[in-house]
Image 1 (cartoon, rainbow, N blue to C red):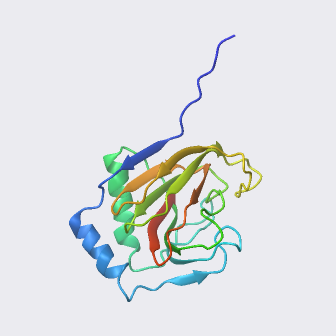
Image 2: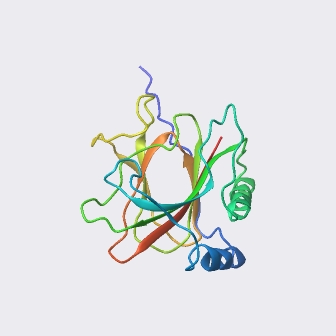
Length: 195
């Protein structure tokens, strides 16, 4: 009997991806005092609240086109396209764009394992500040039943340490979660999904 070798999930990391000019624009505009953040009472479940700034709303990618929501959208779309060009990744359509800000959570170290969509897609994350709060990618794919997976039997495929300017892209069908930073700190990330 032949043993079938399991294929590793798609994953690309560029440790120092953003240049000084891009970091300056982010520092001045996104991390500054005047950037509009919006409160969400539930990230995946109501256990996890967070702040966000939508760049491109989620939408029906089959029957509609993306709707831009921010003056920063084009800036971050260019960053995604630069990453994809460098790493030879094809983009057909961007399906979501958001900047997330999370802070310390007293009860939980990580959020719920989840996927961002119920269809095949890639997830792109850029860390916009230095913070404690790894991104965890698990070894299981979306099961076509629930975009949440609260199953404690998930094994960690990859832990990504947030470092300012680091960019990663992975198969968005794999469950993933964010860890929370220590008290008094914030974790700010760009999240874009695409097909």
